[in-house]
Image (tube, rainbow, N blue to C red):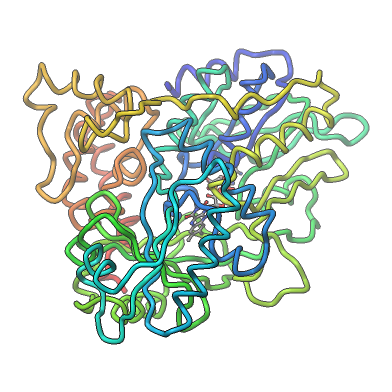
Length: 522
Ligand SMILES: Cc1cc2nc3c(=O)[nH]c(=O)nc-3n(C[C@H](O)[C@H](O)[C@H](O)COP(=O)(O)OP(=O)(O)OC[C@H]3O[C@@H](n4cnc5c(N)ncnc54)[C@H](O)[C@@H]3O)c2cc1C
């Protein structure tokens, strides 16, 4: 992916695009990929970086959703379980199965969750990831030696999927480009164009880097801006009633010693009645999440101190070593784009299913859903868009489409496995140059070559792009990420031909962002 090439393609086109997508999260990139792979012409605009919104801040689960099973939403669970299977098949370098254990401390939990997980297995059918079973206390402790033993009776083992959200997004954007879409980051949509009958037939976007505005024409415009979708709808219809009831979810990241081994913990009911996970991820442990209704939607949401305390207190109940604030390596917060419903009060009960809304002017908005179902959401959306724009009907092909980097045996690349088949090329960058094979920090799995690779091939434009989403440094250890920021800025400045003042500005901007991830600032 190259930003200059994408921008030129977008500006050089005089014919209208079949579809123009706004938003470079899982939803928007999924739609662009679906549209392009059916042969529709398609461009995509992301105001910041791909995945800067919620799509890099998830719990990293590709799952049917045990909570939705508890809520009795069988069709949602079945659809998600099918998508889970398709995603593991199409992106095996980024999605793998993970063992989860529900620890049992009360007599009825083993039969209750044991039967629940059997239903989960059954609903997955041929897309199943492994059979659930009831474990004895010893078997549980063998898998999770740091689990609180006081009152422990046993546990229930089941399997679900885990992935790297931001990395999958970059690979989906690469796949969309390969299929013919033009995808552009740092391109904010600031207005719409309408034809003589008032139908949306184009948009104005700002090239945030050049600070220039441009117009493009499109047969259908798709608003896939997640929690931001109401702001974008109001560019078209200033008095549009809000669709989204935003709520934020916080995760904390701890050292792996809190949860050694390869199994995750699933707590089916926390003190506030929610599900919570402790999951091994990239050599750390990720614990979350919360569900706090919020009034304002921001690109860098900030955790509340009480959300962090709640996570640590809940974790302390299940782990032998109580994690404290001093143990927190990173805190990250995401906003759920939940579709509003007047009948339910708590956001944990709002629908995770997606909604497609068409305004009077023909602006199509897709919102809600979850990462796991991004492909199905995109399929539904492109079906609608094609009908709306009176385009030829073309069948969806993404069920079988391999994602960029597809590699069944990516584990052989060790720390670089998340690049999949591209890891070999990242390694090639290292071999001729000792400078590029350098690891940038003892606590981070990031090499100089990855910075250069991100700029040359993954459209990274800022230090935040590299440290938060092309590598996951900011999520793994925020303080270490701040320490490497000057070196990352220096490497990027060489690649992007920028001067030292650009690098200094980048470091200052990154440090401001990183404050939200550092426990010291709470
Ligand atoms: C805490 C938390 C945990 C979650 N965990 C999971 C999980 O484990 N598994 C799972 O399946 N799902 C999970 N989800 C749900 C999932 O992450 C989201 O449903 C999904 O990422 C939403 O993607 P999106 O593309 O709709 O929104 P976003 O990722 O927020 O993307 C919207 C994009 O639109 C851009 N934008 C906004 N305005 C404009 C404009 N004017 N012009 C151009 N671009 C614009 C933004 O910059 C942003 O990048 C979780 C959600 C949260 C909050």
